[in-house]
Amino acid sequence: MLTTRRGQIETPVFMPVGTAGTVKGIRFEALESELDAKIILGNTYHLWLRPGIEVIKAAGGLHRFISWNRALLTDSGGFQVWSLGALRKISEEGTEFRSHVDGSLRFLSPEVSMEVQAALGSDIAMVFDECAPGQASHEETERSMNLTARWAKRSKEAFVRLQAEGADTGRVEAGGLSGTQALFGIVQGAGHLDLRRNSLEQTVNIGFDGYAIGGLSVGEEKSLMFEVIDDIAPRMPKDAPRYLMGVGTPEDLVEAVARGVDMFDCVLPTRNGRTGQAFTSRGKLNIKNAQFIDDQRPLDESCSCAVCRRHTRSYLRHLYTSGEMLASILLTHHNLAFFLDTMRGVRQSIRSGDFPKFRREFTEGLDANGE
Ligand SMILES: [Zn+2]
View 1 (cartoon, rainbow, N blue to C red):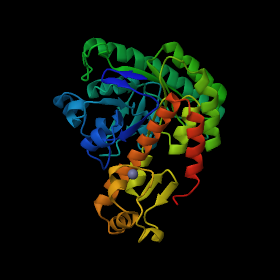
View 2 (cartoon, rainbow, N blue to C red):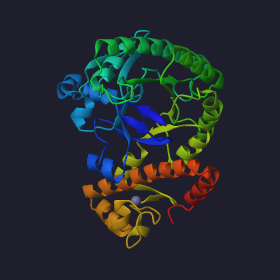
View 3 (tube, rainbow, N blue to C red):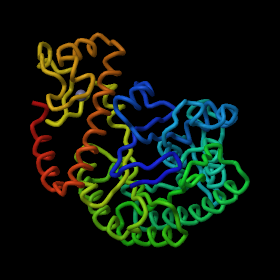
View 4 (spheres, helix red, strand yellow):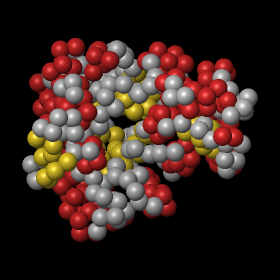
């Protein structure tokens, strides 16, 4: 169970990614009533650059700006600077980079990231970290991991100060729940297990409300990703949520749950929906393929989402090949439904003690390649 100031959330949970204040291609009504997403993610980097925090502060915070009253998690911006920002310069103080929006020179540090996240008023904020490339050497990763630890300490200090100053726009005084933002630490260390353990120890020593494993799914081998999770997840605090950042496919989610992970976010269901790829209980299918031209079946015969109840593969392929925007909308809807339903199934099977069976059958189903 994940306790936020906007309610309790059953875990394991998948968080749809709402990059720029929108989960791309889906209305909030559908996220709430049809998909029942309990928490979504917002990207600090994107919202900070555009529309900027003054606009969001004027609305009274991100919840009010986007009209979403359920829980929100914001990342720190570190990962986007790493993946999108050009000409960046990393110093002890922070990271200098050029905005991908207007080319202006910007500076992001633990203090700035905490200030932006307080202004956004998300329910869970993340520390500002540096992400070492998946193939980084031991020496390079160690330098980066120790910098992340020092930045985590500064993030926590800035967070405490900002909370005391009342900078957090998302504060709620609900019965029994904490009115303050939660802050999660991030374990880095790429594929080097000794550095991962060291990072975890330093992060836990600072003390956070939850702990994330960052810097995975960035181009390393999948076996290495699971090697890191196998080693680190059992060492993470038992009484705090464990969040695997930016991962992954439905299969990755189920496998990571088996290793003790509670929270996930990933752009795959929305991004791949826009490029014609559907995730189903029988594996992935690409709606562009000619084989679906007169296929009268739904995307996934085991899915009860609004799209699968109503539309055929043949129709969805027609929309996609005609460049109709409804294709992206419908595929996004189904993909999110599939990810959220998978996690619902995982939670039910854990409650009834059938998770090993669920995991086996789920994995077998995926091997069917969409058929
Ligand atoms: Zn569906």
